[in-house]
Length: 177
Image 1 (tube, rainbow, N blue to C red):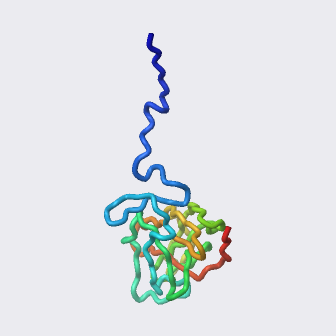
Image 2 (cartoon, one colour):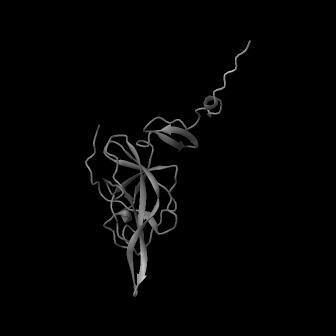
Image 3 (cartoon, rainbow, N blue to C red):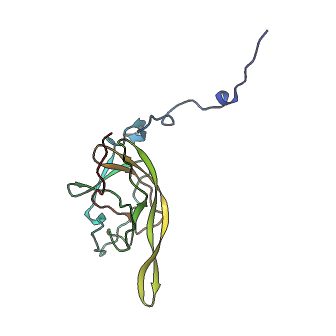
């Protein structure tokens, strides 16, 4: 006599392959054409653009983050200083673009913590001969990880050009545990 056991969640569950089963604090990262579960704190691309600064009001050249890759983690610098995406509204015509992007919510506070945050940018209106930033719109979501003394970001490509991620100097003390 044979007994047939049918367990649907085991029968139809896909095997744990590739990056679908990355451990906490790691992510699916492609390095030299190989996809692996790696720590974004040591596998990131540096963005060190002074034009991204919240202090920059020079818009003689408008920048755009259309070249951002969704599968890459980024670390921001302003010169030799760690930088981070602002957590509050940034007015238009700053950060080397007409619509600077910032996050709505706080950065992670626990070491190796990864959070997901909404990204926003200002919306422009034309009123009596002047352009002004009247309100803001949601652009997309990103992931942020707290490493030892800095943040890394898994950015999303903005929906249109003249949107770029803004950066400022760190606003938080980093929690090491």
